[in-house]
Length: 469
Image (cartoon, rainbow, N blue to C red; front, side, top):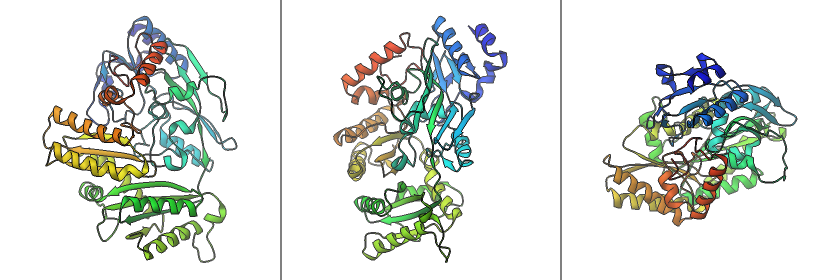
């Protein structure tokens, strides 16, 4: 098999032994891989050839992009690891049609830069944008900080090219905004984490580049007050809020403790701290007046000032320049570094209705104390879409205790009719959650689709589908 792969790709792109080192551990350090070889194809035809050879030899294949996932989605042993890193061409930026045609190995920040050169944006963004690749964000249906305005990755994709388990190429690379020609295979493949096919190319949506931003840190008395703030700003800006991020007091303390040179957002300390950002697209909202004031920033300042006067807010700081804006965002984007600095931990990624975030946090804290009275937790949330990153730190590295904490979080989420997986995917770490919480009929339907598209079970085995190894 290795000889066939070397003939297909060239010896230098079939990595064995120590040459595999870069791909053997994921970002978290909690999951490892021991592949027979790491394969680095240059194009879709070579991916198809890999799958043909793998099928003939009944050898599992695990696709990998930037390897910045948090759920063990690229772990395993005795498989072929298929890296998309060489398939990194930005084939076309079409500012009139507002699309980008890209290879699966394009790094997210590279697409940001290419869109920016045409005065456009690809709005998906998160802390790992300098290493995450388009194939990976599609495979996990990644979210990030701008979902409130632009949606998840699924909402930003118009077309896909996918190689099936048996080496056929599925061309869904249209730029259409409407297509009712049967089942939506594109949406089924996005978020499937490489278990149904290998994404090789994509057509992604671009958006107009905001001409100006208004960004602020705001302290409010409670989470319900934060939603009042969100709704008021949305109403007064015609739904121009791009980000609405919740950082509680413990997050701010963790940021100050872990990040050298970090500064507190306010002179006083508050329980509920919000990062809010508005993006202005219309020139009337972004063109400075005679005094140099930018209308969208003035509007946000006025809204916050009025809410301070009536007691709806406790404090507010509006960024006056780009460096202040970057400092605010650097605080939020340090979340993963802060959350994973302490061990043992139980990390979860849940979603509830916006009005249930407070109930989740209060009930979760109460039940965590019942399980482990000295345990602590760490929270950060995309409050605008109800996505909570909740990390618990038990007092001992006890697998049974950690499982109990994870099940407790699931219990609270289910009671609130939420989801135990919001944006990081299922991978390996949430298989137990899938088995316990996913509707049995939905699981059976997913299994039937997997069996139809990958009858030998070769595509990323041991992920997403509980009991299918």
